[in-house]
Image (cartoon, rainbow, N blue to C red; front, side):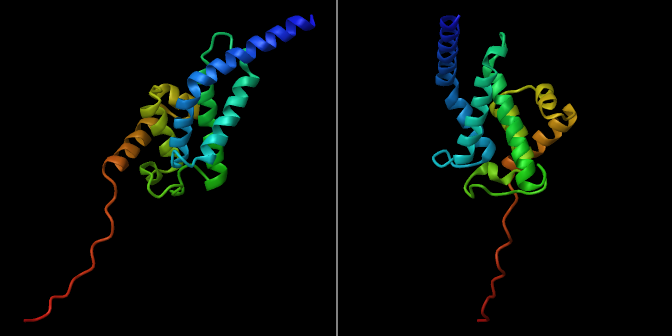
Length: 167
C-alpha cells in the first residue's frame, strides 16, 4: 500500500514538473503583465505565480482531464483581482504606477486584468466574464476602453506660454 502511494506521489510530481517546465514562462509573463512590473524586477508577479502554482499542485489529482494551464491562469486572475481589491480599494478606482515606464501602468488593475486575459491570453469574452463574475457586455466595454487608452494615451500638459520680446 505504501509503495503504491509513493509511486503515485512520484508520478504526480513528475507530471507537475513537466507542466511547470512547459508553462511557467508564459504564466510568469502573464503575471508580470497583470502587475505591470518590469520583466527583470517582478517580485509581485513571481509571488502571484508561486501561489497559483501551489494551488494547482494541491488540486492536481482533482483535475481529471481539465487543462492545468487554464486552472492556473484562472488562479492568477482571481488572486490578482483579490489583491488589487485589497491593495487599491477596488479594481477601478486608482491608477497606480507600479513601473512608470510600463505602458500597462496607465490602466487600472481592472482594465489591465481584462486586457491581458482577452488580448494576451486569448480568453473568450464569455469565459472572461464568467471568470470575473461580470456581464459579457461589461468585459467588452472595459476591454475597448483599455485598448483605446493604450492606443491613444492622454496628452501631457500644454507647453508653457512663451513671451516674445518686443523688437
